[in-house]
Length: 476
Image (cartoon, rainbow, N blue to C red; front, side, top):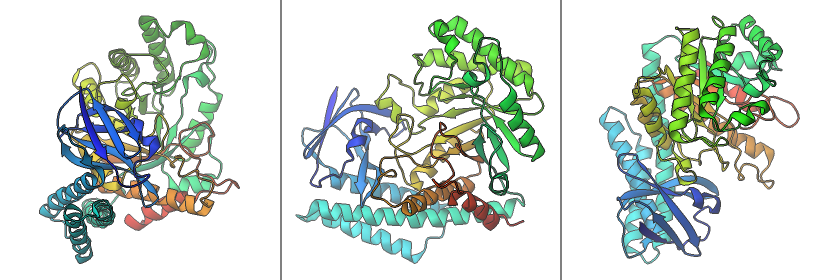
């Protein structure tokens, strides 16, 4: 048991809603949960492990919330100056990727080098000045501006490299639907793939009595419009996906496996040849509404995948990782970081994965990731690429309290949402391991994230932006 304390000189620097998800990350990517409390000017973090590690905390920077890191810190009797340590951590993160990418051939602009120089000067001023916190925050502002310029240069040059290697658009772009979409023309212009919902409680509301009408209608529409189709999730372990009639069996693992196998076999059998890609399970790394241990979830996944493969040997199987940065490790009993959970499954030999889907919902909900910049996303995608599996990015409009603030005009919210989705799309396009980009909600009220429609029923501007981005980077 160890204690690390930080002194804050800036009011409201640490976002109150992010304190419970504040944690530490070791040099090798392990997440160390922490019991954190914010008391006026002191952030107290009690940890179960004493390893040197980086604090990651949700901060308010110029009206925007984002996760900020320190460098690796050891436990100490004295309080660390939070603003200064965050400035040091963010500057170190920028310097590391700047050195890595320029060493690999990236050509930085004079404007980028100038902003980095300003960030260094402000950080040095923070060390030696009596106005430490003010200078440190100014260093963070310059660092974040430099990160934006660095990311722009990186994505532009990486996409140009991909354009030179292939004439065809290198990833599918799709959206989740549960019914044939309204505004079919707009959907078809923006997306060439459909992520078709297969919710168990909807398909089998009564034991053994399946309702195929809606799903068949979606499949008929997708086939008629020559859409690439992914079905799923067949199981959503981050929510209570089981039908009501399953309640007596939820605590019986053997019977649960039997019911799951029967459901997976039945659904996959019906659409053999029409759906070749299935997201078999969503959120197995985190769990949620169902009280299942990590080991039990691993066993269920293996059985579900085996059931699908017994029906169709050529099936392409993926699973979706919730909170891929591992925020849930601070608020649940889980112990395996996201990539370690998937790697354990992948190496077990009991199942075959074709793809990994990364859920990138940003907000303050239990299943959402805390907001981060695109350098964090780039690092995440590179980290998951180590599994040597294709990646799909599953994105949604942000639903944080900040985005829902009534004092912010709808136009400003839509602009902010569109910028985030554009940034996610462009970063995904720059990564060779990313083979698909999917929005998690077209128009369903109960689906993750916000609908791609405005309150007046018109299409959200982000839909047209996807069409524009595809045409810009790979004109036909």
